[in-house]
Image (cartoon, rainbow, N blue to C red; front, top):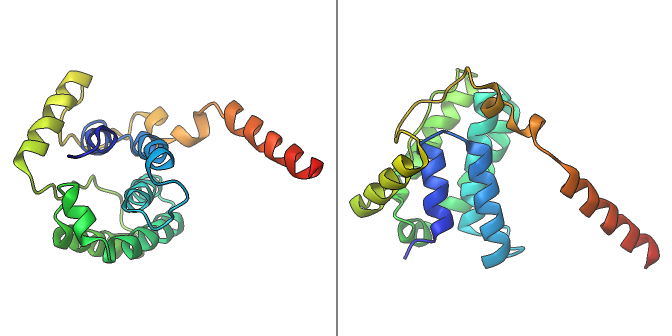
Length: 172
């Protein structure tokens, strides 16, 4: 059974192309289900979303760095990929093709993950529709909130958590 969080990841990846939201959804799930495992397949997909987010913003070095990390994780996670209905060999080819585009500093174009299960695709399409997205829609470059989401988000919680951790270290 594919986790609901991963379905939501796929919906955002292929629907509204909100790669930042993909990262947020899967990171939260990863922290609950496989915390601190930096080699988790979930981390591979988180890094892939981050890479695509950077590429769309023309941050080629950030895109390449995170794509290489995701490829490393995916390279030995064939079974886990396929448990999530992702065709591993097609994913690896997609990553290599995307790497070539990034290395040549070519403009971002929306990509689709190779989902190898029709029932999963149908579920994602249905969820996309429910959320008001169009499955397979290309990125909307006019939506600056989508493109620059990391700059516009509320970081209050992150700042407070860092301050708590710093105070805890000082007191120990």
